[in-house]
Length: 336
Ligand SMILES: C[S@@+](CC[C@H](N)C(=O)[O-])C[C@H]1O[C@@H](n2cnc3c(N)ncnc32)[C@H](O)[C@@H]1O
Ligand code: SF4
Ligand code: SF4
Image 1 (cartoon, helix red, strand yellow):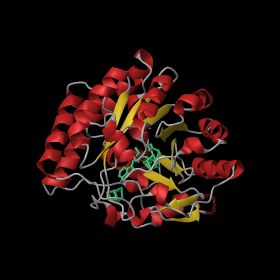
Image 2 (cartoon, rainbow, N blue to C red; image 1 turned 90 degrees about the vertical axis):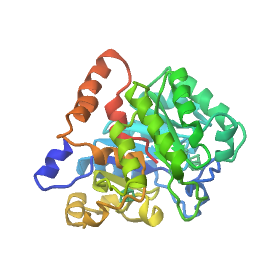
Image 3 (cartoon, rainbow, N blue to C red; image 1 turned 30 degrees about the vertical axis):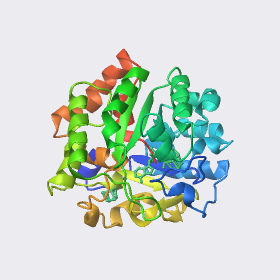
């Protein structure tokens, strides 16, 4: 595993996140991406060039996001190429899922479908009527074909529905992953705060410990509580994840800071050299976001036996006993 490489003094990304586009069919309040006007896409052969560069960098997990990836007609071809190289996951708003699942499922190990509330709350946050029913229909179609998790973003408006989201996941027979809204400068500020948020975090943590199908570890919720409410920072390892923008450019040091501004195309970079000469130390105590795709992998430690057991042993048993690869999904987290 990569932490062994870190112990040898090397840093290399284990996970890659790639936005296939910024365009979207929804208009979520907290999201900056659908508002961007600088979209320029890679062709399929350039996508393959990008993937080969990621293979050379030692990446094992590739998560596709956007924008809304299902708007791309060439998505099945791109996913097939990814599936040949990586553990592949995708996050979608679910609007087009029911009609496209057959062409996508064979190339995906895990699918995340975003749901931010029950019925009208989800539609309110997503800005488009019927987006809730379309996403739930999509989940019902997809869960027959592959492991599915709801990806839920906690905001100041929906935090009182977080437990209902866990109930929904249970009733749909899928898993759920939570992240906390980050206030991008070009989107509405919906970051949750205050005692209600603390209560929500404690409640979800308790549900996780009681066995609810929540992908994050209890330590994930502890880290958010620590950094939000107790001035205790968690140690961020953004280098575990490499983010690639729609033009194939690497977004440094993570996709949150600098508002998703990519620099050089990944195929023009020696990732190992860049990763090991970049000064990551100033980001260790950043704590500006609580995005599951950064926080959860950052928390993994070989010295935490409970976590090792949860991620590795349970995952192996999971493959034998049921279809859901909990650890792989959690390591990959919901891409953005
Ligand atoms: C940017 S979207 C792209 C994929 C797809 N369009 C979707 O909504 O699932 C990926 C995830 O980012 C989340 N997201 C959007 N704005 C966010 C913010 N300000 N902070 C944290 N997560 C956010 C969404 O809720 C979604 O689950
Ligand atoms: S969160 Fe996803 S669905 Fe919502 S606007 Fe952003 S890209 Fe579109
Ligand atoms: S805490 Fe979030 S914003 Fe800060 S470096 Fe880590 S991933 Fe980036």
